[in-house]
Length: 190
Image (cartoon, rainbow, N blue to C red; front, side, top):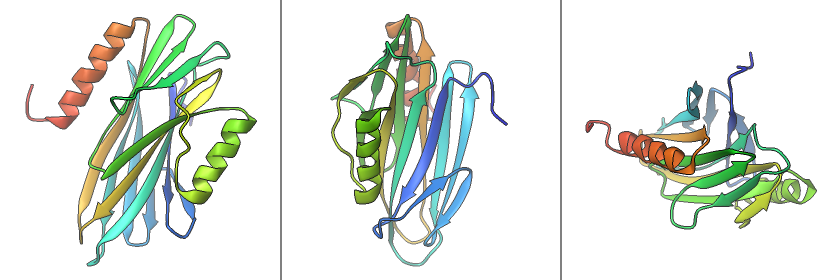
């Protein structure tokens, strides 16, 4: 059942070297790796917590795409990826949104695709090749994409979280993002 308070849509897609991909809804099993995701609606936006577990005695690799759409973004929207952080900035009307990630992936790549024919073609190429095409800024409706590469030792478990915050003031949204990221990176410290 769809939550009416939802401000972001976050979807995970696992990709294998055989050019196969599997949407991840809550739990998926992929060649000895079990992936669990849980999307949560927060008062400030939304988040997606993920856990990946290698259930084999062998080392494994996995590539996962996470797609984030800000549902309030309209034709006047602008999306920009930060060059220095794993952050996306979005502006639409009088609102601003920020998307960020905390993960233990070996590499994190990001891009932003417009939700038009060109962007959908680029996304289709990404799914085919398992790579992202650099698109740093777009206007109108768009989706933000993270690509995470994971290497697993036997029986290793990895965790992470993607979160998206919506607000009216850029500074407040940025400060909340920093507090959330620090809280996730250092959970024992307050």
